[in-house]
Image: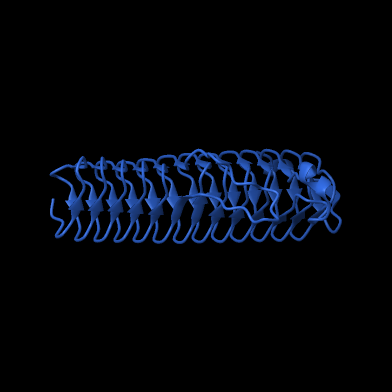
Length: 283
């Protein structure tokens, strides 16, 4: 068990086959299961659970009622906020923050909910260094988040989706399976992105035609809807509320001001139909 100067509160359960690094703190009713390894200075709050064979890097904090699944690996100085559920085999790199509670600015159209479901990560997720994922969000199996990504509250991210380094995904985005969003893309709030969509680097999406002016805008905020297997080229801009049809292809640098029909190639500013997507490219 080890754990020089480790502090284990009454009611906590630490399996004899677990390993505690120096100066760990284990809260009341917390559980550390067989084969789990906690690095020096780790803190488990009350009712937190570290399942069998999971490992926590030095100075990682697992807050109240959070759970780290079997064989999960958390890097140094990770913060797991209250109630967060981390699936089996997940890999969380150094300095990630999981389950952060949102704080709304006084001018924001979003208000922090009094109660919000905890963050849930499916099995085999990978979360990059310095990435922040908010409470209320669900990541499916084998989701990959690159270094420094930000995923806000109340999002749904389907299995095997990749969100690249430095991407921002705002609140209330519904994303299907096997989506690929490359580095530096901005995904605005209230978007729907269906299965197998491809979004290239530095794409910008928008949701407010009034750009912050007027009270009526709040009821009309809506991001784009991107249908199955659509592709959006690097640096493209999608205006609020538009729809990209299934298998549509948006060229790099295009500015989408109107809906894009299914299986069409759109080019330019404003974007216009250039031709059909070649038959051999359709999935």
